[in-house]
Amino acid sequence: MSDESNETVAVLNTTSVVGIAVCFVLAVAALFALPTVQARGGVGFDTAFWIISAVELVAALGIAYFVINLHEERG
Amino acid sequence: MDPTVLQAGYDLLGDGRPETLWLGIGTIFMLIGTFYFIVKGWGVTDKEAREYYAITILVPGIASAAYLSMFFGVGLTEVEVVGRGTLDIYYARYADWLFTTPLLLLDLALLAKVDRVSIGTLIGVDALMIVTGLIGALSHTPLARYTWWLFSTIAMIVVLYFLATSLRSAAKERGPEVESTFNTLTALVLVLWTAYPILWIVGTEGAGVVGLGVETLLFMVLDVTAKVGFGFVLLRSRAILGDTEAPEPSAGEASAAD
Image (tube, rainbow over all chains, first blue to last red; front, side, top):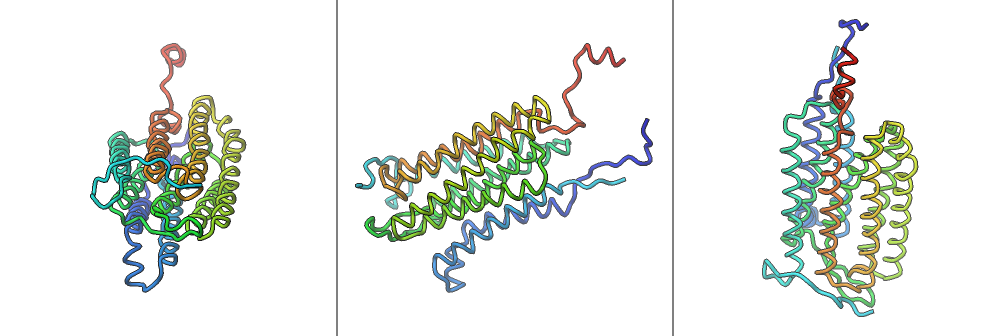
């Protein structure tokens, strides 16, 4: 027998949804940003490339974090 | 060894890159996969299924952007290699893998329901695999390139071993449906991911046995299968559903419950 007053429901965490969207847009933008980073940042290809790669990895980790926390329990 | 004994493709943009045919096809397949998963997942209310859909939609989504950048030549650079001259390197491919491979592994980790430390370890070794591959791709001497390739391949073997042992055991404990789906996906990953370093070593970035056209075609086939094919197998399985939408009981079970 369950006590209904203690039941919780899982609802979408808005912050996580926004976080996933931001990370995705960041990752897509980074794929096309290398020439801009080189030109505006005044850096060589290798440096720009590692910056882009770091952005991709951070975006993936961000998405992993936000997906794991996609729902929150509300009582 | 003489490079580019095999070539294939069609120069769609008229800029001297016959591999644009395969990059264009890759972009289309990835877009189809992305929209198919979006349509399939529209209106899904199951908590766990939503997580799988979120990850699995993003994987071909970012891959389609990577293929588009390579198609238009944005994701392309040249690297001088001693004894080989100037190589065309599609660097966007590596950026794509840095984003997509951790998410594919996250799908498998969520399916096996392993703890966060295991997920972190798996993704960490995976990142090491891609980063060492990146260093190899940008290195200027054959010795450095092959050494980093070896490091990357060893990291890949560790990832695959982890999948085939720890995660497989964890998936087995979650019941036959999860175990079956996990085993199918792991077999897919084991076969496809093993093909990547082999293609790299025989392709233009390694020994140059096959030309850029064939290499791009084969990478496209591997990428589409490893991302869209993987997602298709995962999302059609009931293993992704949480307890709230578990398979309905059979007629016998239902009447017994009544």
